[in-house]
Every structure is written in C-alpha cells, then in structure tokens.
Length: 212
Image 1 (tube, rainbow, N blue to C red):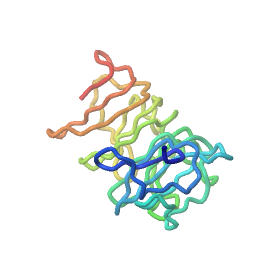
Image 2 (cartoon, rainbow, N blue to C red):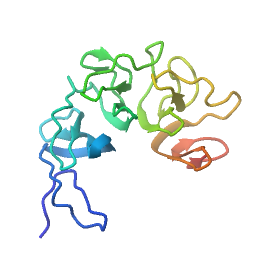
Image 3 (cartoon, rainbow, N blue to C red):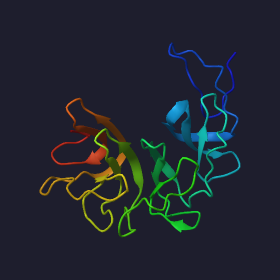
C-alpha cells in the first residue's frame, strides 16, 4: 500500500520513500522547491481553499519553519525561485505588488520573510512581463529570464543579468549579440570553464533549445 503525501515528498538516495519527511502544511500543489541553508527548503505552492501562491520555508523533516513568515501573498503568480548565499529567497512571476508594495515580477525576502526593499531596479520598472526563470551563478550574478523584452527600460531581450542588489548589468549580453527572446521552461547550468549553459523554449537565431 502507498503512503499518502500531498504535493511533496522526499526520496532516499536509493529511490525509496523517506518516511521521516512529513508535509503538514496543507498544499494541494507545489510549483517550486529551492534548497536553503542547514538542510531547509523554500517551497512555493497553493492551499486547497486558496488560489494565491504562497512562499514558506520548511525544515529538513518537512515541518513548517516558523522563523520565516511573509507578510502577504503577491497579487499574481510566483513561477520561479532562487536563493542567494545569504539565504535570501528571490522570487519571480507575474505579480506586480507584494503586501501592497509595488514589485514588478521580481522580489527578494530576508531570511525571516520580510520584503527586502533594497533589492530592485534603479527605475523601479523591472521586467515588462512574466519572469519564469532565476539562477544564481558561481560568478555572483543573478540571471533572470522569462517572456519580458524590456527590463528597467532597457531592451535587452528575455535573458538579463543582475548584480547582488538587483541592478541590471548592461554589459550582458554584449553589444551586437543576438538576444534570447520569449523564454518558457528555462533551465540553467554552469560549465566547468565558467560559462552559462542555458536551455528552454525560446527564440535565438541561429540556435534554439540550448545555447552556451
């Protein structure tokens, strides 16, 4: 007989079910999971009776970590999450406000769940459409992708690079290079030679599907 688990479960290294991991937070759907420090996890999902996306942190045993609590849900979906070296989750999606504070599709929280108002673009415009992928690379930059074509007023395509404070790096992509556009289902990896490997459903002449 199977063991009931709603929306999230953990497997042992041999693929067997880990009975020591319990999910008691009542999600009917989990969209994203990202590792936090100390064996914890950030989880984005929805509850049975609600349609808003929530961000919580769970302990290594699956219980909710009460040390992390966000003030309010965003007014749109959270579609992706990445965690920086200071254990601060950055989320992207279709939202434009969080706790009635303008945040255009990209936001960062403190390790305790407070909205970090020091993070974001200079002009406060951010991406002009949905963010569907985030990746913190070993070079210290945050790579952001999605269906947007403009970021903070700059027409740099649908893949941009941000510094630790959320400011856009105008040196990426370099002048004259073809822009990645209209990205969905993105995947990121970092090569041993210090190069970004990027895959997904996007347009990029003369390549599609994957590029380095």
